[in-house]
Amino acid sequence: MVPAYRRLLSATLIALLFAPLAWAEGSTIPPMLARPKLGSAAARIPTETENKIDTISDALTLVRLAKQFEVQKDWRHQAYALQKLFALRPMQGPIGYELAAAYARQDSKRLAYDVLVRLQGQGYAFAPDQDPRFEPIKGTPVWEYIVLNLQANQKAFGGGQPGFNLPGGDTLIESIAYDPSRKRFLVASVRDGSIDRVDRAGKTEPFIRPDASNGLLATYGMAVDAKRDLLWVIGNGVPHRKGIQAADFGKAVLYKFTLSSGKYLARFETPLAHRPSILSSIAVSPDGTPYVADGPARRIYRLAGDALELVVENPKLTSIRGMAFNADGSRLVFADYDLGLFGIDLSAGKAFAVTPHANLTLYGIEGLAFWNGYLVAVQNGFPPRRVMRLTLDETLTRVTHAQALDAAKPEFGTPTQGVVVGDEFWFIANSQRGQYDTYGIPKDAAKLQAVHVYRSDLKYAIDSGKAVVSPAAAPMSPNQ
Image 1: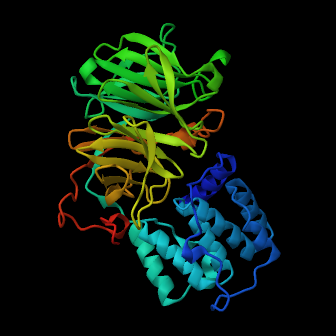
Image 2: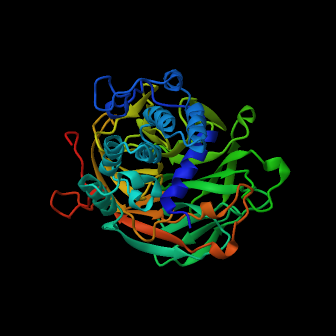
Image 3: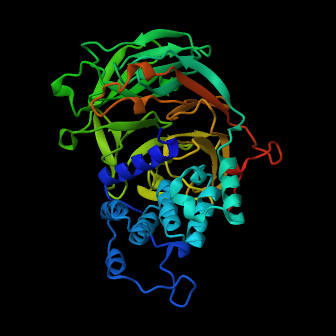
């Protein structure tokens, strides 16, 4: 069986092959990854191939070169291509792990150790001791230290508890919301678009069903506006939707329902010129305006009157995921799966990046929510999967402190979206999306599991000394 972290690495490289080519402005090769200086212990004369790689700033080309060099067992040039790629995508620890493996195959202990220490410090839980590619660099005290700390990152951590389970089967439940008036959760199915109400014990009751009037497609997300008694839903015309009609392929729709009754009110489609579209996330501002993101197209829309109006389109992004508003609705923060956190100052009409401090990676964020001024992030893009509580500065442009609420829990498969309920964050802990092929068909229906809804304690370790913090989740400050 292929280890989980190797499957993740393969998925990351495949994603890069098909993802838009984008990276942060001004990226440079970190000092530890730069070409060794002449006169140093690792000095060497650059090859013609390395000189050519130096001219490449295209992530897709670098991925292909790295794979080509791997097939040729040319570890030196594979490492050189990967170090350039890691500089372009510094948030992606799986690329760093591949780089460390390429160094190890050359018996470049110092370089391999440097990368592994960096990854361990960011909380990654790779297992190079189980990877034969690292055989040449095993057996030293430094190696034992690195492995010990990476293993510490694999240990279950946090103050959360299981919430409830939803029945298994071919439902593909990807989204969750909460109705505070009736104290019921809402869960939605990608497979048939249906929405159910659920109590805290996991007892479900039908709420909204697709019909000729609403035409619900595959339901990917929901947002509750309790103040206005509204439920907003995003749906997509994808193969995963059972019985989808040919005319609906590529459509992306924002639906409006009455929260209390489930009555269908209206639907709003993305512009025809922008199809095919896939709406990946939704957030409602305090003034009641819904915002939706077309993740793959790197676009964000807002509802203006009876049409979806384009707010942001940035081809330098890769894939927009979770979105969340700050308390006064002046700023919308969103996650780019590969590049980290960004935001929009809506009053000024300007975009901004959220800068992490040292030892914090913002890679692989799927879900976002604000709670009491903190930003809660679901990170499912690397081992161990975790839920983080981030403290931002007053401009929301810099992370000043980070604390894992839960990490590596046995219930975690692929955690996705969540919702704040009081001082708890309830989220889907084991999305079954990986059990479906690209045509929306279960790979093996017998392997479809019950869906675990987990709840993290948002106050966990909020005061210093409240909890013993594991290396994978240590509170970090800018000075670390």
